[in-house]
Length: 326
Length: 258
Image (tube, rainbow over all chains, first blue to last red; front, top):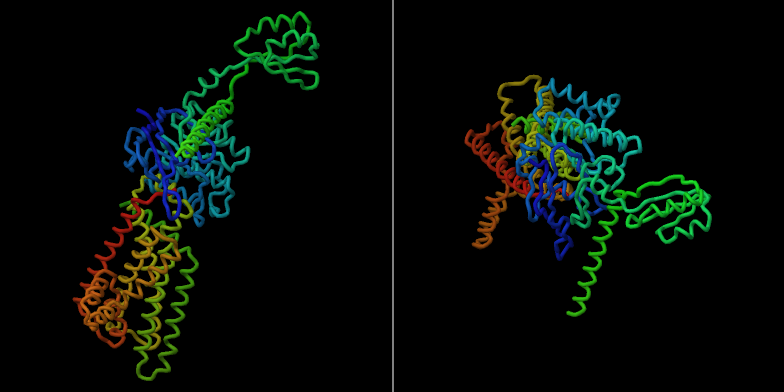
């Protein structure tokens, strides 16, 4: 069973006032998210991340394609008892206090009063709002509202939690707390499906990621595989290397960056690093460090999104050419 | 059912925190109090004035409350995006509509009760006593509540598709037209034109007819409402409210929240 599965999920919005025309927000998305994994949906603004989440929660309806959550159809509202959702930039009822709001959320799940009071207390403590639980939400800062949002998403102890940009608008401390919370949820065996455009968060948290750009899936896979497959070079940092040494090894080096007394050399994976090290040792130069250069998620992301942009640009050029021919 | 009750209770708590509600109740009570003054300068028809003005105040201020709060019921949830987290819970869309409706009706029931208590206090002050016969005014209050039930359903329907200002304009316009429906139909019959007659007949049957619910002056003159009218008006209001809420649910089921 997959926690989330989408098959050719597509969403077109109508744009324009007088002459309505469709704009594709999500294009044939195929995703499979396993249970008990932290899955990150990455992409720049307008990539289709929130659209995907809203489709899964049936806040909007697909133009074509299907999806299942916890092996149930999306229109099975009873399935919502097993999931939690934090919307992007959440906003809740001004007039309620955090405790009242969480109580309301718990009531909607049909929780009995005693269980409800205990669960609300637990969650207020977990998100660090115990002292502010009787203040109306209108007096809350953005970070505090986000915490309330997380608490309401967890009120029913869900198996699967959807978080739409959970770190947005948070200060570094708040972001760290949310990161810790996601790791705690993973340790409890929950599935976390979250969207973000902050790559460092995804790199720290996700088992797998999917990259969206302009509504299209650009890549999907295990983060470890993506990053370890991406060893692209060996980096050697030397202290005060002589000009003679640098010219001797110049043929092996693709990049040379000097910072003060130190020189950073990059030797591509295709070349053997042994002759370079030999020359360095013979010259008696001090080696500060020697490391494999791994691809970061950012490199991977930029490469995939960059490629997609290139394809799209080429596509547009072809369209323009065809238009010209016509 | 439990979820509908939860949403209704939440809506009730939300609407009783609206300051505009208290202002309207206070104004209504002041006007009912003022009826005593008007009554005292109208020789011989003190009771008629108090009953007319008192019940009319309940009707007008009840209408204002129903429109002011009704138009924001669903729109506010969409505009402030609280609907996102609400619909992500095991809440069916129709449960939200019905819950919202019942919540506001509970608010209106309580406010109408307060205004009715004020009305009877004014009547008791003027008459120095209250008789069983005075309870006949409750029939008019019941009809006011039926009307408010229809107005809230109208406001809720418009609130699903439109902004609060437009919803208020549509609801208020339909209320006014609904009070003039008998005249509109009479006008159609008077013209002698088959086209106009058919058109006004369609309008008469299609739009909510509020004119049958206005029994205030009848009550003020001591005439009880015939029981057939009590039954037919109750059934009519129930049917109309069901149709309006069903339409609101159908629209809301298809609505996307981007």
